[in-house]
Image (tube, rainbow, N blue to C red; front, side, top):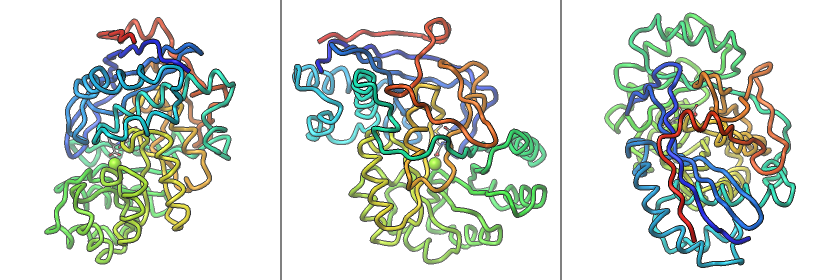
Length: 369
Ligand code: SMG
Ligand code: MG
């Protein structure tokens, strides 16, 4: 296939309610999409970066700059030899910028698979037709407010609750949820790097709540710290921010620093690398689950296909569109008995709705070969 142009679209999509993590509070979700225009058709993808470099070092304006200045010229240069599989080897020279690489690789994979009539799920070797859905619950101003949100999500049918935590919003929040909803609900926590090696005793107190896992308690570079913590606490240690490649995942597993992996395609540079991480994890009997970056339907569709692979044995943050959005930008994904159907149409399996894009788009830039 030959890449003719790429459109970078910025959208501002309001959230139903603020989503607060240990590093930010977001009301208006700022999104960047890559729309690839090729000689065999078009493809769509959502960039996983945030507006600011707060979750990782990447951010929207930076991702758009690296696409414009380095990534797209290289891919235009491949001419008719371009395939989605050629993106990572072509960009191998370029350090980092995995979220920018993920966006273009995914848009090209979408175009390629739409052309061949293959769904993301069958391309990835996914085996499930629907996936169990978990929900990520932000940090709140009060315990009663938290319990209200959790009650609502449980009544909608979500099969697993993840609580965002930070120092000062951890033990009491988890205890309140256990006291109110009991020991049967699958429950886990995510710190987004908010703790240090001085907090091990505090984190050990969470052992009493029989959590599925604790996600990314320490700094993303502190692999040894996670190993020490995994030895110190009973709760399984899950890594998110720390795992950016299959090689890194293999190392963390061998070191005993990770017991469960959150796979987010954007964080690791795309679905092809995600599949490799899945395979490494399965080979070592490490469970994986699919994370999220508050994706609109464009990003959510592809994540659902990934979450349907056999090694994804824990519910992901693959919630329904209505978790975050009053109006999604594709046909919305809905929760049925705690599950979401995996798209079966070619490519990512959903299309952006032009009138809704017009409503939320704040800029569109067309970069031609
Ligand atoms: O897509 O439901 C979602 C978001 C899930 O908690 C979620 N993501 O570290 O796992 C994570 C966070 C990152 C959010 S960045 C604003
Ligand atoms: Mg996380």
